[in-house]
Length: 405
Image (cartoon, rainbow, N blue to C red; front, top):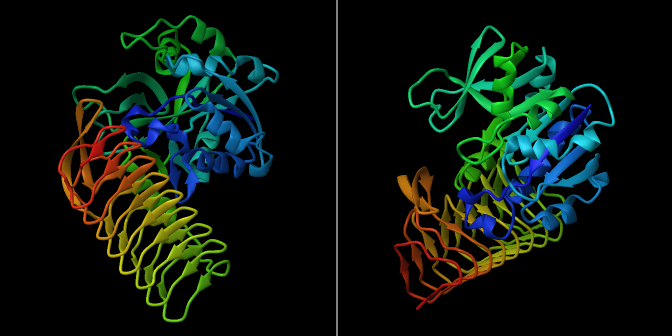
């Protein structure tokens, strides 16, 4: 069986992080989201993958290449204009059409596990199968109305509660889907949606069924959702500190993974689950608390405190800093006494619209320099390639290429 992974979109609601990479390349537990998706497929013995790319495609292709290092065989197709999921799937027609039988479609920006894919395969019936899960809060989601296993209606973001069954966007389809996509009308949103194709199948009396999953599935819609995904994935972390150097006087509790050529200096205190990449320099007297991922080539100065955060690669956090519930992009440096305030039930502006964040410190894009004694108020975002002078309090979003003096 082959799989089509949809990885062409930008992920605008994850800005500023997606100004320099596509959403599928955002790291969770020090691996791109897309790598977690591929791992889930491999564990189900699905090793032939068609990767539909578009936005920042070179970064994806440079990382995964032909897939051999990840145990798969990858062929790439490009969706030059991101005009819907059905259109994206159609780009894979020539490659998928080489074989007969069913194939899987999965989004490259969802956190899934092995059992997620197993649930779809084991529960598949009929002309198409949709993987669903139950959620109490279905606001801003596509929902499924079903009778038994038979899907009767697919509704995008209903205004009233009609179902607790969420469409995960993971499908098992047959070759017939390509002809049906070509007959699909463009939506009012200006896209060719696979849900519209599936609804047309239902209306024509074809057998569209659902399979239920109670396993790991998370759509990281906003950049702060990465923190929840990070916490979930780190829950399965296995301890391994053998590759690094841990000095005397370091206290490590719980599941902690330390990469090669990384030094944890005396007096530091780490409570897992925590993953620290290669070539890092931590401490002395640094505190790192659960659900934290630290990428490669990161230094954290003495007496700093990091909790429930994602630090990407090539970052320098100076002494006496406090980072909590935050996502920090690559190539960021801070002066001493850098503080991120943590808030709850926040309204965060993305693309001129307000979105709710249950808990957040800040999100910082790539290539940012921050001086000493800087405080970032909860929920304010710092965009890419910005410079912030020492002694500033950031009480509003900092746009791309800004200088705060």
